[in-house]
Amino acid sequence: MTAPPEGTLVELPAPEDLTDRQQRGADCVFCAAELLTGHVTDLGPQPLVAHGTKVRWFPRACKPGCAS
Image (tube, rainbow, N blue to C red; front, side):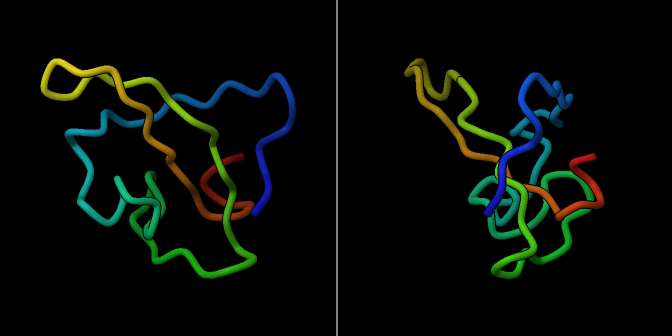
């Protein structure tokens, strides 16, 4: 798994608009393709308020396609 280049800003879709698999990081947050080991870009922890509680979610994307 790799992270996007330092200082890169990627606009993410709203978590509530994603499927369960996209929210869990099993599918790309942008195109919903299944993510396979070695072909993933970790987009880093993102803050989120869910049910009144501050949490973090960990979106992932295709490598290099959707995250670039």
